[in-house]
Every structure is written in structure tokens, then in C-alpha cells.
Length: 167
Image (cartoon, helix red, strand yellow):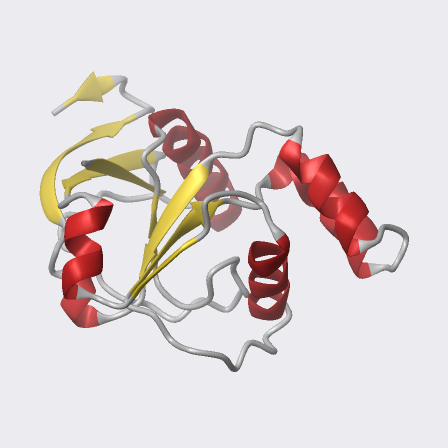
């Protein structure tokens, strides 16, 4: 399986770095199987940080079935109640459940931000929120949360959007 990581720099050796933001799946190294999602995220990161160029690093990794046989893996097949609770707990820093080596599931990206805000404000019920999310085309993310799981990523190349060249 090929995974992509969008950033403002090439990441040939992935590391676990604590963020000052709370993210969907908590602390970890975030990747996706969707190249366009990584490209969009790289542009946002480079813009937000004001340094570097939008870059996408590429990795090869075993399939989910193989990873599940070696690690503690949490898989969300879609935007369901369990996923919604997990994402909200991580985003507001209150998650205190089980810890996993790898987490795979939908990404709560900018296109659904207002739906999340409405849910958090109590305007939408959990059921209404999930119903709205199910009609959106949500991309995926695979987050590696331990050093041992991170070693599964084999760097295979990158591309920098500013120059448009692939290496």
C-alpha cells in the first residue's frame, strides 16, 4: 500500500513530533492513501508555517490486514458514532481510552468543519451529524502513533509542488 504525507518539507525519516494542535486521531504521524489530500494538506501546512515549500513524501507499507496481525490497530470503516466520539475526544483533548499503534479511518477535513462545529454547539444531534457526514466524500487518514509502528513506513520518494518536479 502507498501512503502520502503532506508537509512544508520532505520527510524521508518519519518521526513522532508533539503538535500544539489537537488532531482527529491524537498524537501521531499522519498519512493518507489519497495523493490529492496530501497535496492539499501540504499547501495548507506551508502557508500556515510560512516557511518551506509544499511537499509530499511517499511511503510503502504493508496492507491493513498484515499490520493488524503485528500491531494494535483501530479501523473506522466510515463516519459512524464510534468515529465521531473518538475524533471529538481527541480534538478537545479529553480522550483517555485505549491506545493504538495505528489508527485508520475518515479524516474530518475542512469541508465538514461547519458540521462538526454545529454538533459541538449542540445544534445537531449525533445522528444528524453522522447522516450529514455520510453524504460527504470523506478521505482517509492512517496515523502511526508509536515508534515501532512508524518503522513500518518505507520511504520511496517525494515531490515538491512549487517546482512541479517529481523525484
